[in-house]
Length: 165
Image (cartoon, rainbow, N blue to C red; front, side, top):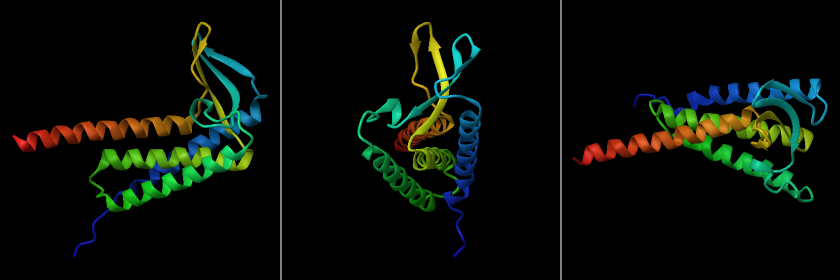
């Protein structure tokens, strides 16, 4: 039986996302004071912020238990996605890329949370007085991964419709 190449070969995406995220967070922590903001464009600042919660500061105002909950959640989700990568064929490029990006982003935010007790965020987009929640590279990796999964699902539903005809 020939050795089938699995989706695990896409884990290098995870390493890239993880490394870029950790490096950019390190630069922010070393070069900014907390809440310091540097205007880059009329709608974009680099702003050092801390998030003890999850997306959009969900559960941030709790007593600290959420740190361990989000660490466990990142580990469980990453383990599950690694399992999916192992089961996938390497030709499932969109899905494998998506899983790998989500793994890299989840583990980077998890490492930040484990080391600091919070996640370092710094991308601050705004319009006039409205500010989108500040985010980081790991969040981008997770969102791009989720978008790729949606695209893959849409693409595969079109293939299934074509096969039924």
